[in-house]
Length: 82
Image 1 (cartoon, one colour):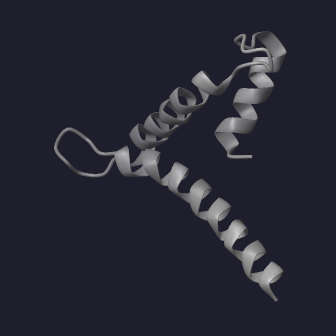
Image 2 (cartoon, rainbow, N blue to C red; image 1 turned 180 degrees about the horizontal axis):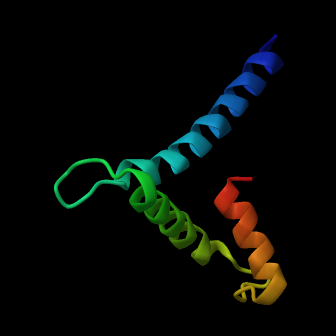
């Protein structure tokens, strides 16, 4: 019984973490007038926000920045939230 509760807590933690990470870009999508962005402006903002969040994480195991196909693959997975 304890294992099930512990496992449920772990799963809930990861689910909440990924939801909060996506929510930060969405919550920042506000225009200069304080109104939420919509349409193409929101799409463009979300793409740039996710790219900016993933770029510093694009490192190889030895700490060097990824390049080429490896970076493209990492960025695609990171921006999709996988």
